[in-house]
Length: 112
View 1 (cartoon, rainbow, N blue to C red):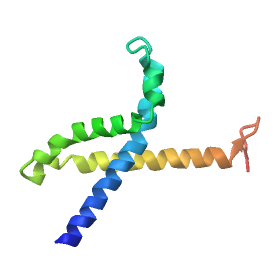
View 2: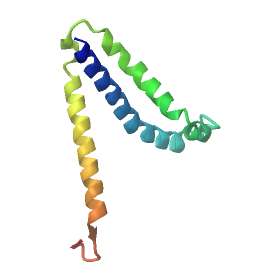
View 3: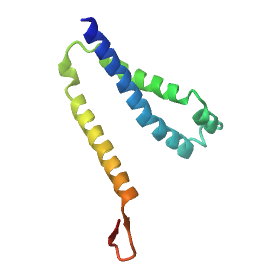
View 4: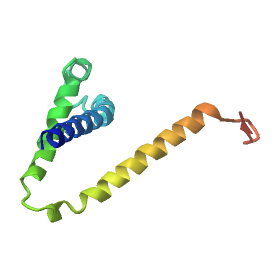
Protein backbone atom coordinates (compact mmCIF):
# COMPACT_ATOMS: atom_id res chain seq x y z
CA UNK A 1 0.00 0.00 0.00
CA UNK A 2 2.84 2.37 0.81
CA UNK A 3 4.58 1.66 -2.50
CA UNK A 4 1.34 2.28 -4.40
CA UNK A 5 0.84 5.57 -2.55
CA UNK A 6 4.41 6.66 -3.36
CA UNK A 7 3.96 5.71 -7.01
CA UNK A 8 0.66 7.60 -7.30
CA UNK A 9 2.15 10.63 -5.57
CA UNK A 10 4.97 10.63 -8.15
CA UNK A 11 2.45 10.37 -10.97
CA UNK A 12 0.55 13.37 -9.61
CA UNK A 13 3.72 15.44 -9.30
CA UNK A 14 4.76 14.53 -12.84
CA UNK A 15 1.29 15.33 -14.19
CA UNK A 16 1.26 18.75 -12.50
CA UNK A 17 4.76 19.47 -13.77
CA UNK A 18 3.68 18.52 -17.29
CA UNK A 19 0.61 20.76 -17.12
CA UNK A 20 2.69 23.63 -15.78
CA UNK A 21 5.23 23.16 -18.57
CA UNK A 22 2.50 23.15 -21.22
CA UNK A 23 0.35 26.01 -19.98
CA UNK A 24 3.00 28.47 -18.69
CA UNK A 25 4.28 29.48 -22.17
CA UNK A 26 0.74 29.58 -23.57
CA UNK A 27 -0.52 31.84 -20.79
CA UNK A 28 2.63 33.96 -21.00
CA UNK A 29 2.05 34.58 -24.70
CA UNK A 30 -1.66 35.26 -24.18
CA UNK A 31 -0.98 37.69 -21.35
CA UNK A 32 1.68 39.49 -23.37
CA UNK A 33 -0.60 39.76 -26.39
CA UNK A 34 -4.04 40.49 -24.93
CA UNK A 35 -3.76 41.85 -21.41
CA UNK A 36 -2.09 45.20 -22.03
CA UNK A 37 -5.40 47.03 -21.75
CA UNK A 38 -6.53 45.20 -18.58
CA UNK A 39 -3.36 44.99 -16.56
CA UNK A 40 -0.73 47.71 -16.78
CA UNK A 41 2.20 45.72 -15.39
CA UNK A 42 1.47 42.39 -17.05
CA UNK A 43 5.07 42.01 -18.22
CA UNK A 44 6.26 42.22 -14.61
CA UNK A 45 3.97 39.31 -13.72
CA UNK A 46 5.03 37.22 -16.73
CA UNK A 47 8.73 37.86 -16.08
CA UNK A 48 8.48 37.18 -12.34
CA UNK A 49 9.94 34.03 -10.85
CA UNK A 50 6.57 33.10 -9.38
CA UNK A 51 4.60 33.05 -12.66
CA UNK A 52 4.96 29.26 -13.00
CA UNK A 53 3.66 28.83 -9.46
CA UNK A 54 0.66 31.06 -10.21
CA UNK A 55 -0.12 28.94 -13.26
CA UNK A 56 0.17 25.75 -11.20
CA UNK A 57 -2.11 27.20 -8.51
CA UNK A 58 -4.75 28.07 -11.14
CA UNK A 59 -4.51 24.56 -12.62
CA UNK A 60 -4.89 22.97 -9.20
CA UNK A 61 -7.89 25.17 -8.39
CA UNK A 62 -9.56 24.26 -11.69
CA UNK A 63 -8.88 20.52 -11.36
CA UNK A 64 -9.55 20.12 -7.63
CA UNK A 65 -13.38 19.78 -7.94
CA UNK A 66 -12.76 16.55 -9.86
CA UNK A 67 -11.36 15.04 -6.66
CA UNK A 68 -14.75 15.38 -4.95
CA UNK A 69 -16.54 12.91 -7.23
CA UNK A 70 -17.87 9.81 -5.51
CA UNK A 71 -17.57 7.48 -8.49
CA UNK A 72 -15.40 7.30 -11.58
CA UNK A 73 -18.36 7.41 -13.96
CA UNK A 74 -18.40 11.19 -13.56
CA UNK A 75 -14.88 11.31 -15.04
CA UNK A 76 -15.68 9.28 -18.15
CA UNK A 77 -15.01 12.16 -20.57
CA UNK A 78 -11.59 12.96 -19.13
CA UNK A 79 -9.98 10.14 -21.12
CA UNK A 80 -11.08 11.81 -24.36
CA UNK A 81 -9.57 15.11 -23.26
CA UNK A 82 -6.32 13.38 -22.29
CA UNK A 83 -6.10 11.47 -25.56
CA UNK A 84 -6.82 14.62 -27.58
CA UNK A 85 -4.15 16.58 -25.71
CA UNK A 86 -1.58 13.83 -26.31
CA UNK A 87 -2.46 13.85 -30.03
CA UNK A 88 -2.09 17.64 -30.20
CA UNK A 89 1.30 17.50 -28.48
CA UNK A 90 2.50 14.69 -30.78
CA UNK A 91 1.29 16.56 -33.86
CA UNK A 92 2.97 19.80 -32.81
CA UNK A 93 6.24 18.00 -32.02
CA UNK A 94 6.14 16.22 -35.37
CA UNK A 95 5.44 19.46 -37.21
CA UNK A 96 8.27 21.25 -35.43
CA UNK A 97 10.69 18.38 -36.13
CA UNK A 98 9.71 18.41 -39.80
CA UNK A 99 10.22 22.18 -39.98
CA UNK A 100 13.64 21.93 -38.33
CA UNK A 101 14.89 19.12 -40.57
CA UNK A 102 13.38 19.93 -43.96
CA UNK A 103 12.93 23.13 -45.95
CA UNK A 104 10.98 23.93 -49.09
CA UNK A 105 12.85 25.62 -51.92
CA UNK A 106 11.31 28.06 -54.40
CA UNK A 107 9.77 25.25 -56.49
CA UNK A 108 8.12 23.78 -53.36
CA UNK A 109 10.39 20.76 -53.46
CA UNK A 110 11.73 19.33 -50.21
CA UNK A 111 15.39 20.02 -49.48
CA UNK A 112 17.09 18.05 -46.75
